[in-house]
Image (cartoon, rainbow, N blue to C red):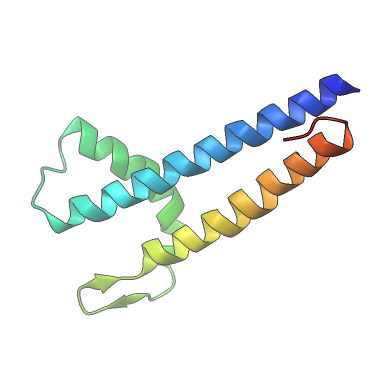
Length: 102
């Protein structure tokens, strides 16, 4: 049974790291939007492709006031609620139930 506990604990850690990386990429996209950068740069286009997957569902909601776009704030909240609190929380509880603390 400890095997399942370690499996769930490892999955919780992996998903937690993925969500933290998504946070960092969203912050990088926000900072890049403040400067004039080439969208054809491979680094910038990679960040845009990864974060577009997160931001596109929220773009359907009119969250832009003037030149300020509040879509990333909603994306941060969604990642926090769905990712950190829901998915990682459930995986940690399952790991704890199977006898792995932490």
